[in-house]
Image (tube, rainbow, N blue to C red):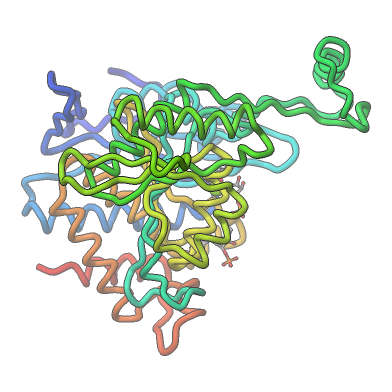
Length: 420
Ligand SMILES: NC(=O)C1=CN([C@@H]2O[C@H](COP(=O)(O)OP(=O)(O)OC[C@H]3O[C@@H](n4cnc5c(N)ncnc54)[C@H](OP(=O)(O)O)[C@@H]3O)[C@@H](O)[C@H]2O)C=CC1
Ligand SMILES: O=C(O)CCC(=O)C(=O)O
Ligand SMILES: [Mg+2]
């Protein structure tokens, strides 16, 4: 294949999907990466160095990642031209090479370009945003017992108000929609129609079901105790309320869950372990207090796009902050790994921030490839660096007696802590 600007490594091979649907991963897989805006320039090289060290240590040179830079965001405008934020060949490469990793990309508030992160998820139909939240012993936390926070968020990644279907106040589009709502739909509640911006919140049965199905399957495969559907369905009845109803119906229809004592909750036996998996729900505002006060009650979370955005940052704070929170965007074939945090512009280029979330996102990627030995080394390296209290500023400011490291020094500390 030939790209205009992307240099395909000649030593590597693409990952492919085998006949049985599993991934066929060569020893030198080509992995596309997007450096990212802002602190991307700090964390992405550190992540690559840590991954390369873990792979080298685990497989003694038999395996090696062939990194391939692809462009998005500000760097794309420098490489391709002033208005090219997301080149077609980036989308093609991410789709073709099946597993990739990205740094954060800037989205201006109010006006300007629409989110490139959301566009990538929509264009590639990466409908699951998977964000596991676990505690590393020794990490400073605002909670007394942070080890009780162990949740895996399945955030619907393609729909909801987050899809960005909206029109600014005073625009022709907003006027048309308001007119339609008032004249044809009997909507009389828009108090200041002339100055209202309008957004649309699509939530579909198919979109809900494919997300909830993945969450329940994850609970089965990983022997988890419950799946909680988080929604604001008391207020947004036909979007968030429908998400809850479709979720329960799917659990009953496809997984054989039965109701518990006449409550909406239901449960079924995990076919792999025999342990009960409870499917329950929580209203989003109450849920945000429950995760602080009773984190032990929650395990796998399935939720809509915007709720998932809020919940993932809130939960990250409970276990050390968004500098430590990894994630993945998944379709049935394509996986794009990325940190939970954004571009933290005030720290850009200062070699200060925590590369932990991108390193842990890469750890998820290695596990996804089946390179579990290298993934385990990364976890051990992170655990070791935190236990030794050699950490970046974000953890240092909350820790007694710790040594403050730069972003790149933290990467070296993680590598040094990997057992040989
Ligand atoms: N997937 C993506 O690409 C995402 C992109 N964004 C985009 O990022 C831009 C900035 O968003 P903003 O709301 O400031 O959120 P950010 O997540 O970029 O930063 C908020 C704060 O979180 C802390 N933080 C973030 N990353 C790290 C890190 N690696 N190590 C330590 N601390 C960290 C810092 O806190 P402190 O100041 O206390 O040190 C920082 O000021 C926006 O354009 C937004 O749209 C946002 C989220 C995801
Ligand atoms: O796209 C963006 O700029 C923000 C995305 C975000 O906050 C997230 O994915 O968690
Ligand atoms: Mg977010």
